[in-house]
Length: 421
Image (cartoon, rainbow, N blue to C red):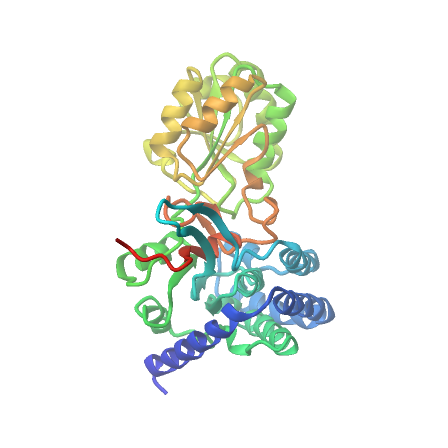
């Protein structure tokens, strides 16, 4: 069978399954989610073994440390996947919800009903947990999905997909509601992104190269973000202890994630106090600081200090590297962020509530945070149960994409025999 024929078959099965999923009641969908969660915990050893096979192959192939970190499926990560499914099951089912009902002068009632998108194609690299997060959200939102994970996670993704399909069958739902592309042939991606007759939306989760390719070639609408150039601004009215903790966590909690801070902006009034404190903590983690001239003067003697270039303000490092700039004030910080940010997540640390609100209003990003780490920009942390991805677009969804982001609204009209005059 050719790749085109294989992908067409997956598309036909997904389209048929999407009709069954759109009719499924909440109890049935929740039962599938719980069965999947139970099976994941039951098969922890099997999943770890499959993941180790992927890690061994990836290490031998020279995969970058950031990618290996994303690929690793620890016992904690497995527990988190199961917990995420239980959280999704506990969330209200948005499907069929009718809102904004209003009587019109003609006598008709007009409102909006929330409905599934249909079939969602998800293309992702490395992270095997995406297989379960995406499947869980698509099941609860009444969608079917075709998953195309990276070749580096093939064994683990296949094991997880088998568990998901077991849970679907156990709940009386079509196993084809969640299908994984078993081939590592890159031509499969080209087929997925040019099958609007079968796939309603594409969600890419991967590196900049992948997403740039999809943006250029896809004929299917996408929910996406290109990169995560995230900022933390430390205001001159910040609590120094909070500021140090937040700026350290935002950079060093994990390097290879899209919500990791890549640029630190510090108000001139607090820079002499906070930068030396942060330098001590960053030095322990061997973080390279690419700093402007004013910050370098305050960081004299720091062993991993480099002069910043304009390219650094545009960089998503995904590594222990941080761009640092001393700014005049919040106005200067907002201008810098709106110039260089990828509109993913940006944060302010300040005890001035009015400044925090102004920062939130004026920073044009999908998530804007006051007095907390950018690492919280995540569907699980936002209480969505899990996320299918993060969007820094303004249409159709923005920020972490949970259940509501996988639905659309259509107009519904209730009449009483009215005819238009």
